[in-house]
Image (cartoon, rainbow, N blue to C red; front, side):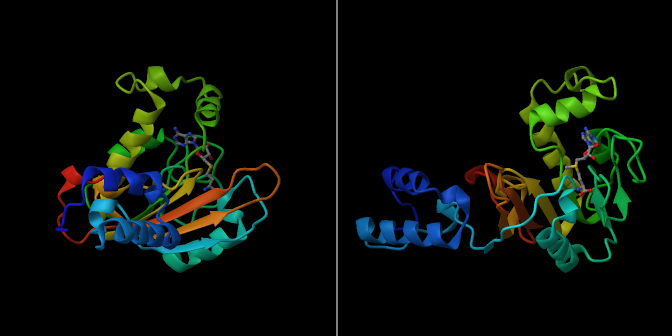
Length: 233
Ligand SMILES: C[S@@+](CC[C@H](N)C(=O)[O-])C[C@H]1O[C@@H](n2cnc3c(N)ncnc32)[C@H](O)[C@@H]1O
């Protein structure tokens, strides 16, 4: 078997949950492939990232950066916040350059996050913190409370997915090579391979009951050139 496993193998790997990026799942895929094809699947083609994975129960908090394991993670990666940008700064951002659409938040700028990101120069940030509202309803509520409408404000952005994708595209442009992006939300997509980032760490924070986990991803901008056509994420 060469470098290209046949399509059914790739399908099977995706069916096994490759996108979760955990060591466990990666191992299962590799074993399944070995059983079927008697060879190791090439990791890049399977979209498998080897990264640190942790799952820690934590008290929920309206302000993400007050959640204890997140405080510790921020201390590890972004302790002085120098050269870091936070477009959805809220109350507790350690970043040097902060923004929040709500003028009552203690941030340096009070703009729409996408407009704010578009003003930042290429390859200028040591890192970006990306902690937006976690659902479209939350995002829209926030806009509505300032008398704006997401669709009117961004008339070239017809769907919510486009809004987040546009933010991510800007973040990928702004971060220096080798710089970091830490994302918070209900999924582990992060900025993604397609935009030139590799996953370093995934942290799951279950809060008990029927609450959603908070999911944190830490990614680094590649220091090498990638063929962007071949990857998902
Ligand atoms: C999840 S909170 C961030 C909390 C922050 N990380 C903390 O722990 O203090 C999201 C923040 O984004 C702001 N926000 C919502 N929509 C925005 C937009 N389109 N542009 C800029 N800020 C926005 C809200 O006002 C809110 O403070």
